[in-house]
Image 1: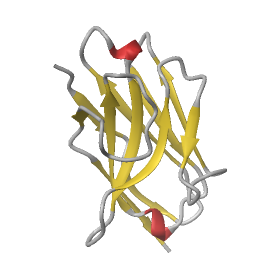
Image 2: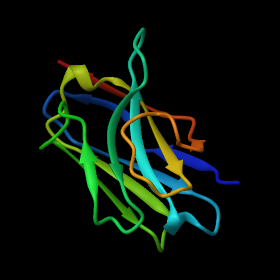
Image 3: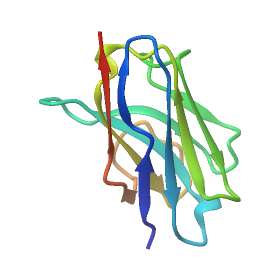
Length: 124
């Protein structure tokens, strides 16, 4: 069993930055691919970014490419999402997810574990 706990969300102004963290429990964190997703009110959960077990492969949604950076520290069992140049349309609850098979995925299917989410609100 893996438990994921997100932190770092908050209320910021357009153009500001935030760094989200996702702390994981479990001894096999370093084997997992990790992903960040977000869900805005009235919308479906959407892919944001994903990273493979070593951090050597990353993928991003087009909407965040060039502004967001996903990274991980396997020694700390933590994955991060650095978000720069935030815009009001980035407002959502952000979730991290773990894929025990280790495959980087851009869909929600296949991720075995999910955190509870952290709210990010960007004012204009």
